[in-house]
Every structure is written in C-alpha cells, then in structure tokens.
Image (cartoon, rainbow over all chains, first blue to last red; front, side, top):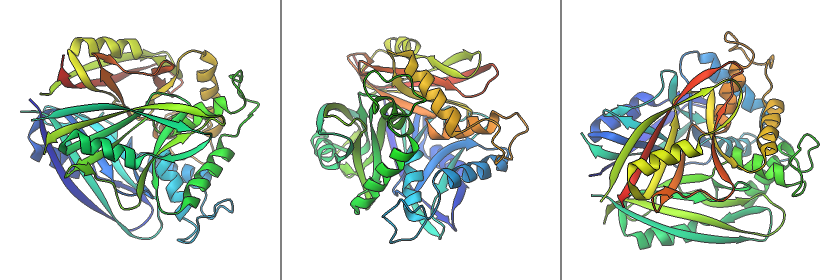
Length: 142
Length: 142
Length: 142
C-alpha cells in the first residue's frame, strides 16, 4: 500500500540568507497521514536552493554564507549573464552547487531528521523574492 | 494506489557541455501514465552529471562552465588520477559537486518545473561519450 | 502495487575519508524484496555526507579529498563556528557541497549502479564518529 500527498508552500524571502522551513514542512507531513515513507521538497527556481544544515548555532549559516560569498563572488567579471544584476549569475552557480530538491525519510509520521539537522531555503538573490516549493509525501499510511 | 514506470535513456555527448534533456524526460513521463508523483532521473556515470538550470539565456550555462573551469581546472598538478587525461579527475570532482540523480515533481501528468527551469545532462569530459540514464516515474495513475 | 522497506545502518568512521557502503546497502535492497523501484540512502548528520564516486582507482577518492582540503581548508580564519575545532565548520561546508541523501534505481531486485559507481559515506571530521543512515527502498515487489 502506498499513498501520495502533494502540497504547495510559499516562502517570502526579504533577501539573501537561509530560512528555516523545517516546521512548515513538518506540518504538511502531519497532514499527509503517512507513517513510513519519504518527504520530497522541491524549489521551482534556479537562483534559490535547499540545504540540510546544522540547526543549533546560527554562526554555521553565516559562515556558510561567507564561504559562498568568497567562492562565488557577486560581480565576478568572468560572468556574461549580468543583465539582472551582479548577484544573478552567482545565485545560479550557488543553486547548482547546492540542491533543488531534498528528501527526508518519514518515520512514525514525522520527518526523521538528525538532532542537528534543519531544512533551509537558501535565497541567493539580494532583493526580496517570493519562492514556490512543492512538498510531496509518499509512503504507507499510518 | 501507486504505479511504477522505469525506462532507459541514452544521450550522445560530442564533448564537454550541457545538454537539455527536459523534453525527452517529459515524453517518458507522458508515457508513464502517472498523474501525481515524482520523476527521478539517474546518470550511471561518475564523470558526467545532472543539473536543473536556468533555461532562457544560454550565457547562464556558458558562465557555469566558465565557473567550473576555474574552480576545478583541467590538468591540476595536485591530481594523481591522470591516466585517462587532464580532464578526467576534474570531471569526477565536477560530478561530485553537482548531481548524479535529480527528482522533479509530476503534477497533472507532466514535469512540474518552474518557468525558468530546464533539466540538463552536464558532460564533463572533453571527448565524445554516450551516457546512460534511467528515468523512474512513480505515483498515482491518472 | 508499491511496497516500502526502511532500515537503519550504522557506520563507524575512524576519521576523515570515504567509506564504501555499496555492499551493505545492496544487502538491505535484497532483503527488501522489491524488484523495480528506488533506494534512498540518508545520513542523519551535517558534518558527513554521501557521494557516488568512481570505485576502481583509490587515487580518485584521495584526489577528491585533496580537492576539498584546498577548496574548504581546515582552520580557515573566516569561520566563526570554531568551538568544536578547526575541522568542524569545513565539515559542514563539505556536507552542503555534496549530498545528505542519494537515490539509486532498483532494477531486478538490485542497485542499478553503473560499472564504475560506488556509494560512499564521506566522513569530514578528523576524529572518529559513528554515523547513522536510513535506507528506504520503495517499489513494486518481485
């Protein structure tokens, strides 16, 4: 026996940074009524992405941001895709280096994350963006 | 209710670069007869990979290529795995930094991609290669 | 028809490096009794990760390690999250640049890996760690 549940999620991002969506995804998993299975989170954009990251010390996420800022700097003169601004092409590169979609196991009706794992939307553009996610839960009903 | 569909896909790559496979995967999803679910694309190689990337301006993909060429340069003297040429080990690194497999939600019988999202095979070797993919579609029949 | 199988896997890592888990995951797939489907491997940590990598020449994995050691060096003075040591924040970055979860298609009851593909746990911390994985197999029974 296998069931499917699919729902949209909208996240308003005021600017570049990581946004914790763990709780909102967890609520959809609870609604799905699936006991054992998998939860997929997908982002319908190519300049924002998803990461599973340490959820206790906020410095981890600011260090991640600092790392990306150095590895994929805004305004890199190598880039030709610059019409939308100096942060646009770096946003695409950052998205390719991280994830467009992530799976988390579902066990006993809940996201089976490790103690220190949180699920984050990583907005890579500097200006505010409304981001659209699709959450799909599949598995055996409880 | 849940159905499974699995099919092979072969892509001939004349050399390094990104190859749009969105349409070919979409055709398999249509054949699968699944209305709500997920589509998984897997590449059976470790020197080519998959990315979801902006699909409108070709400069995005050439900028991506330029970024990788600088971040993981061919002929890096640090590498010891060089028997197959100066682009072989960089190809493995590029594959590890991107994706061996990708999921896209299936909604109303079609790939639910964002407006600017395309699905690309990224060949990292310089010489021609025939690449083998497996496409798995799972979900509730329409 | 669709079945689900979920099992835990524990891997003891004496220190930084790649650990082949292909055979252990394959054994769980055999136990699952699923003929056509997908196998998901998930790591419940943010300082170790998963990669599909070339499995023939060990130099590929030591070159990968060398690449990461240069791209994300231990003791980087940019990082503020340093309480757990100079390799802690680099471990989180390495995990974000690789995978927390990986799927491999299941065909004829076995992992459908390419000839040169192996499934590795990549421990990024220098000290010994016990790592917890969840393997989920889903698909049509054989």
